[in-house]
Amino acid sequence: MYERLMDIFNDVGTPRILLVGDFMIDHYVFGDTDRISPEAPVMVMNVTERQVRPGGAGSVAADLAILGADVACVGIVGRDANGEKLRSLLQATGSVNMEGVLAVEGRPTTSKQRIIGLAQHRHRQQLMRIDEECSLDIGEEIRSQLLRHIHKLLTWCDVVCLEDYNKGVLCPAFCREIIRLANQQGKKTIIDPARISDYSRYAGCWAIKPNRRELSLATGIEVNGEESWRTAAEKLARDLNISNVIVTLDKQGSYLYQQTAGEGSGELIPTRARNVYDVTGAGDMVLAMLGYLVGGHYRQASLPALKEIVCLGNVAGGLEVERFGSVGISREEIIAELSQQRRAKAGKLRSIEALLGELQWHRQQKLKIVFTNGCFDILHPGHINLLNFAKEQGDILVVAINSDRSVSSLKGPTRPIVKEHDRAALLSALEAVDYIVIFDTPDPLHLIQKVSPDVLVKGSDWTGAVVGQEWVEQHGGVVKLMPLFAGRSTTNIIEKVIQQHTNQTKGADQAL
Image 1 (cartoon, rainbow, N blue to C red):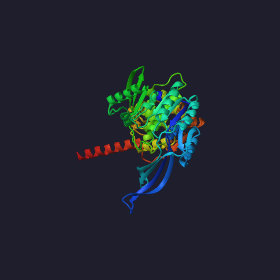
Image 2: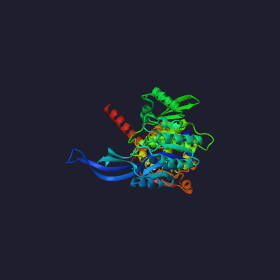
Image 3: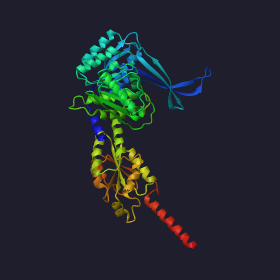
Image 4: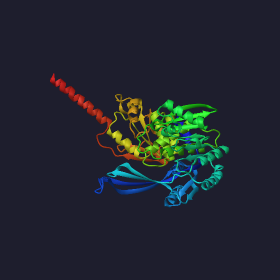
């Protein structure tokens, strides 16, 4: 599954996204809150940092740019400092076109200022949000100007994304016209809807992405379980002629309902449980990922299954909630997450053939491969130090362990104490270790030549040339030796156990 998801993600290219919606700017004011005001029973915040980020549709545009899409934005800002700042933030990405974002006199750029308190410079907590906005529907003259931009951009784009925060841009008549024009040109529309009760403005779109509360409000159905997910999603799809309804369900994942020729089917697409730090921007990130993937595969012979696209949307949204505020997720982070989930499902032990295939993929992502080897018989702190040191030298750590037969040939017939698959299981539990492979030869030279790591790590007690050092250095890699602490070895542990057993036996004999 994860190999398929990575293939879909890697095959996207540079999609062209037309993004229409409510563009905002987010201000963050951070400060220490460790005393009460003498003037009133309120906290006093001493400002330590300020940040400014794109918000609303601006957040989606920034997310798309970070993923690698070309984005053309259509919407409005005020003729004010916030509008100029938002424009400069997005234009600085180099792949966001703001020509279709009009500066409108007489209404402010929608802004949200979040006051974030910290205790002893940590434990961020939002204390207050201060909004500045005008939510009145835009007038006919502004709609006409925006539609002229949309007419030009529809021939250019691969997909149309609408980000509606009900701030006056995507008013009913304007929204319906965008969907009609997109359908006329065969372009898919993906909508992140507003929290409103009347969804008729979204009728005829290709896909809509409400969360559970938005779906309840739009359908009048309490969304609290799988039966209600299907009932509400089916009603929305049927009543508004929407092909795909994607309901985001927080830690449960997403519910996908698809309707074709009057027939519908639904499926829960689960996600990995997360430590939720802040939900701000999660919905924007999911819309960005859906638009990125659908747009990226638009010109190919067939679109990947929407289930697979929603899976990737879950991954992006999950990464977002682990961050504070609206922060874009890069391609590298998505790939690293997919790789981690794949390893978690498949385990870390690999055959050499499977390992080489996965390392090739990691190298395509410009990740540095580290290799170390050993018997790892009776795992001890010296091993842990070595593996942590090795992991610090690169991105992916491959640990090669001697087979039982190989250990016996090196250490004698009484070794190993712990069998090879048990040793592999213990190493798999360590966070530093990414892959484990078992080799059956007296030394790992043949394996090192196949892996050809960027970094080869051994303990500094190694005498003479390190096995594989010449090969690694000839192929542009380096060898790193980790200083070892005396007395920390499996042999010493075994000798101590034998000595204690001998002493106990002597004591028992003397007692007799």
